[in-house]
Image (cartoon, rainbow, N blue to C red; front, side, top):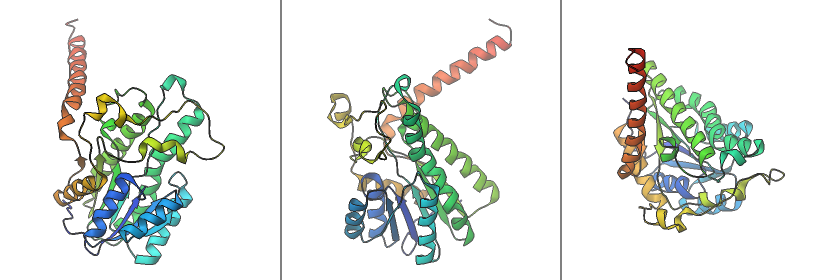
Length: 279
């Protein structure tokens, strides 16, 4: 089992690295001696974050496969190899599914899901190539475990998909005996810019049903434990050191996951009864 406790000297790439969780991960990597490349679609914040952290900044649109491939090529040209990839960029706008346009669906799937797919496609061969211990971490959410979140059905759809992609990849890598390991990050409430996701919607793609609310301002969510991005960075690096496949920031939220699992278990039990002719 691959576990990486010492990141000093390793080459790390973090998408969505100009703010929020991505920046927190990048900050902790840089502090521990990694060579860090941060990628983001917003050039101004990207340059500022790179200068602050001591990272290389590369403007990248994760929804564009060619842009992510260009990022991978630049990392390889500059450093010769890559050990850690964090497919973290994402958006979190809100809408009832019934109100969404196909353009709404395309945007959120392109960023949240295809952004991860593009990252895996471009970087996994590079992680495998050198044969050294390596990790690919894809950011899902607690919304990848539980979908009962008003207005965030589309977001949860993408995060469930990221969970499945990463778990499948982890199993494949383990069966191969690869030195590369895959993990999914499932954060809960974190102080970030995700409540301002609509600012990055492409020109010409405006409209639709998405709105953006800052859930930290609501009484229900304000009472929850909110983490700073750098704290998430600490949790992620600790997860790599343990060789985790699932990295969770809010263990106290497990009852929600258990409730969903119990409902599924009950459905299987009822199905078994029907099969046995008991109902």
